Image (cartoon, each protein chain N blue to C red):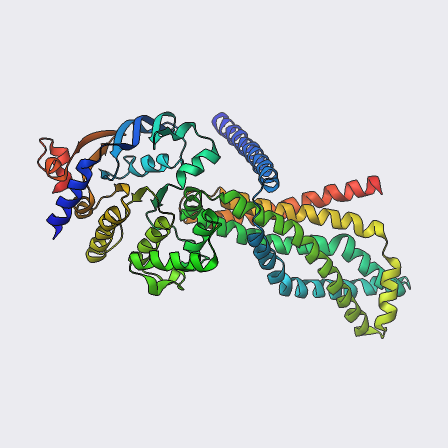
Length: 263
Length: 258
């Protein structure tokens, strides 16, 4: 029994040690990102290409999920609001819920699944097949070309995708409202715009930049540091999704607390 | 035919005595595993040096140290008279441009066509070149490796031998003075291996390159090497020409030639 306890204790210590090492390595990786991002030359062509892949190519997925978010939120909230005779609050409630919380978190989670895993798998396979080494021996900085461009692209594209998801979600909400009653688009949008304040949009936008940064950074870190062997490519992609998703919830929790304190 | 080529290349190499690569007392460990335990070697200008050894003996690690892909624990690696272990990244990159490296699986960039694989490297180091000049140089190099028809293909559409040739073309496009080959014929059939070996010798003659060739393929070693070294347990165990080592008194050395 004593041996089992000692073993468990050692395993636990080892587990926390590994987490500590990972946090340290991610911090160093982030610091290197800031250093390399500032120093010229700038990989503009690759950055634009990554913006296209991460932003434009995610539009269909974000459109569908955004629309469903708005539609379902409206349909689910209507009966409760109707009980209190507060159906007229539905447009503002849907818009505020989407803008402040649901659209940023759900869009970021979708992008963690699509983008972060994609980056992790891509860089992981480049590492395993020595393509990253090939860049390095050709005197091309692989960190600047592969990592900096991808992190900057996710940091810029995720907020734009969230704005887009907000808009599509609000339209989905309009469709949801019209299933049970008839409301004009003009009146619906007027209700929505009346309820939204700068203090709703600003904190939500700021946190999406952090979501984007961490989605890119974790994907790049996992891929760039993949071990040798094809198995590690899958592990890098999987680990990127899990870690990025977890970090989105943690950032969201911190952001909500800070918003409550400051605004 | 083979003897003529071998004799010609030996004659050319005999004139050259300037060491281009000089490794002194190279040590490297991964954790408790000591891979290199004091490697010493010299490669003269224009020479093709073949390094043989069992898997895991440290052959590929040695050439990766020469381009600074792996940091050494102890020792000197003098390339063109400069110890690269003491260079910062900027200085190291200046030396790297003068060294070509052919990876075992060619390491072509999967997301780029053959044209872009070559152009990507060339454009970064020759910014003054116009698009037409870049295109011209890409076509010239592809012609020299006999694969001009593959210019628009993606790496996934190429066979193993073609990938090696394109990898070699990408290496040659910067006109390196040194080429490091990591198992250039591994995974290829006998005929394609022979073609790649011929290409290695052709490049040595045409571009006057100095090369280190890591291989397990004795036919390739015989055909391409002016001198051979055998690495064992992290040190250079034997050195000589193919014929000398084949007739060695050491049974372990002779076992490579069976």
